[in-house]
Length: 529
Image (tube, rainbow, N blue to C red):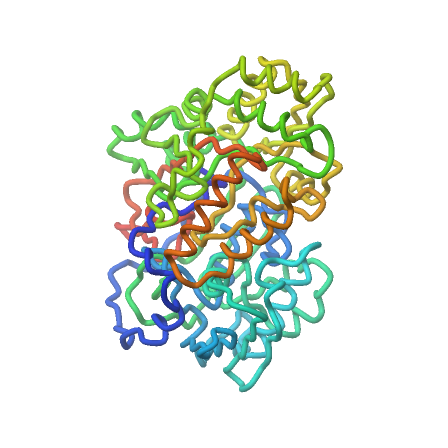
């Protein structure tokens, strides 16, 4: 399902924040050449749900831009199948004893699609351009002291203080590497299609906005030599071309694969699961990493600044019918009360007594105590995907049933994201959180003017800083438990649950990765090619 992006397969990283992640990378065994098992050739036609507003991954945070762009661009680090950060364009990584200076050695001989070699200057320019996009500093930017080129293939990254999420941030965000000249030319503007140049296994061939995006194999691709493991390792460009056709209707996408017009469709209707699973010509793929479904509140403007109004909305929510309406089958959802995935080492039930209350009478009582007078609460949601429309309609119905005047505004994903950064445009945002296996708090503070300050701002800020900077796992976990309990009490968001993704593929295709967020089509091939 488009937009489903939250990690669940996180079992082996319990020690991730207890030791230096960089030390694990620096001490990794020598690369092992992996054996090629796929077949080259063919054009994979994909029925995709939404159009990318552009392919500038630095500037656009839509699912479509990220999904398609991940075949074109690469990052310094990526996640393996256990969601440990591993080098991609980086060769090695070392950190100083005080944990503040990170030295990143780059792989040599990596080529951009224009034939030029990637160097440290490209890396520094790309990170600086990425930082320049945000109206407010990211967590990493706020902790950055300096980023310097200290050799043709060496970058020195100095932090202002401890930051246990450093490598996770480089692996999980859109800090893709582009040529230095392009970063400088388009530092404050959007990339044009002729400047969509990365180091990935595929390059842009054609882009008809709103209709299709064609990618073709980059013959100069210089990949890693290790066996594929999650997104780490060799990314084979087995396919001659990957063609994304924009088809917003999930039924049309599904029928297109059934008819043989396309070989893959992402985000098809969940109610087709049993029928597709029984069809020998098709593959029913459950993409295991899940998304966090919830409601984010504007705590700075409008009626949702009132704590009791937010608590009333929390009391009104009944999660089971919302999740069932959206995801249909139990295989695709989990009523999880935690801010992190159930399989995450950061999973905790702290505050779960406030989860899934389904108590309309309590909600009405809290609204009366709040002095709520029926002022409209603007709730924005994403219209591109049926399951998100269903979530929004169910949530709005439950809130209206207790007397809350909901002004539901469903918009396309690009507009939704743009509105999040303008707190005048919304009071509540009902959607899914972006994928991030790292323990971060970004989804609770989308924009400065709409962020959760806390009933006791100083103590809340101190606790938040402990969660974000503590390097010892046990102490950090204890701080996070306190933070989750505080979030449940002060309600900057309402947790609804997790959902999984559903895709359908032709039976003659292979190589899909279903235990990572996606979709990704490197390493995919035709069996009969």
